[in-house]
Length: 482
Image 1 (tube, rainbow, N blue to C red):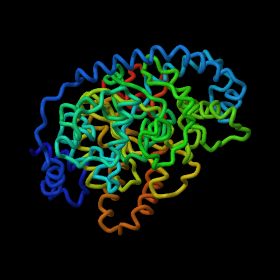
Image 2 (cartoon, rainbow, N blue to C red):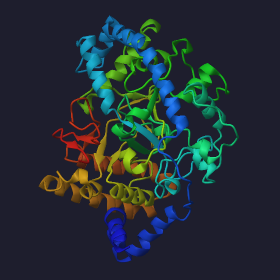
Image 3 (cartoon, rainbow, N blue to C red):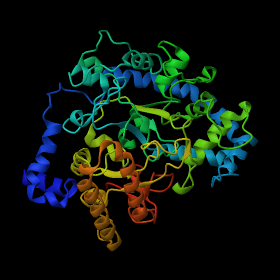
Image 4 (tube, rainbow, N blue to C red):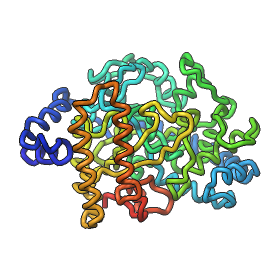
C-alpha cells in the first residue's frame, strides 16, 4: 500500500532513491514475505509446557531457601565486599539485606534477551529465526518449529539441545525424530538475563537482540544458572564437549523462577571457576565472591558509564531465562537492539527491521560491540547505546519526546548520518566493511553520546512501569509504550 511504502522511505531508503521508493522498498518487503507458509493453530501455552512449568516452579521453590541463605552469606563476606569496592560500585558498603532488596527489584526489570541474525548463519551448528522466518509470522519460532515447518534444516546441535531441555529443564523427550510441529511447540525460545548489562546482549548468538516484555513472560519463564548447553556438555556429559567448556559441576543447582531465583545467582557465581579476574587478590577460594561482585556491580548500577568492563571470559556468563510458551511477537517483545558494526546500520536488513519495529510499536536501539570488528576483545566497555530517532518518532513510546527541540535536532542528525551510511555502503568492498563501520560508529557516537538519544538499560526504581524499554541517559526519562 502507499502508506507502507511511505513508511519504508522514512526509515529505510537514502534520499537519492525517494523518487523510486516503490521499487526500492517493495523489493525489500518481498524478500521477507516470499517464503511465508501457513502454520497450524498454536496455543500460547501448551498443556505440556504448563505441566513442566508447574513442576519447575515446585523445584525452584524447594531450592530457593538454601539459595537465599547462601547468597546472603556470600554478600556478607569480606571478599565480596572488597571486590565490590574494587569495581567502584555505588553499592559498596551496603549490607547484604540492602543488596538483596536491590537485586530482587532489579530482576523484575532485567533485560531478557534473545540474539539472532538477519540471515541464515554459515555455521549450521546453530539454527535460529531469520528475517524470512520472523517478520511475517505471528510467533517467535523455536528451531524445532522451524524444522517441522520446513523453514530450515535441523541444527547441528539438536542432540545437545534436546538433552539440555530434557535433563536440565525437565521436558519430556520427543516421541519422534525430528518432532512434528505439535511436539516442537512444547519447547521454548531461549533467553538470557542480561546481568552484565552488555550493550548488545549475547552477541555470540547474533547481531539482533530481541528484548522480551517481562510482564508478558514473567510467570512462564524458567531460569537456569548458566547456558544450559554448556552445562550439558561439561557436567551431564550426554554430548561431546566440543567447546571445551570447564565448569565446577559440583556447584550445580536446579532451575529457578522470577519468584524463587536466589540459588541461580549463587550457582552462576560458583559454576564459572575459570573467569580471568580484573582485580588483584582473587584466589580459588574467593572466585565465586569475585564473580558475584562483578555481576552485581553491573546489574545493580544506576550509572551505565560505570559498569565494569567485559572480558572474553565473562561475555558468556549469563543466567539463562527462557519463556516456556509460544511467544507472540506483538505482545511478547518491547525492544530490538541492533549491533551497529555487524554490517547492519544503513543496510537492507535494517530497513526491514526498522519498519517492523514501527509496525509493532517497538523501541529500536543501536549498540556498539567492540568484538564486531575483531578489536579490543580482551577487556573493553560494552555500554554504548543510542535510540533510533526515526523509529522512536513514529511509535507510541516516543510521544513524550518528539516535541522537544533537542530531539528534533538529534533526529535530523540521525537521519542524515543514516542516509549517508546507506548511500555509501554499496561502494565499500566487503573486506573493508569492518573498518568502515568502526569509523562510522565513532562519528555517530561523537554526535549522540550525551544527547537525548543516548539510552541505557532499566535499573531498579528507574521507571514505574517494568515494561519500559530504556532510560535516557541525559535526564533518566523512561521510554515506555503507555
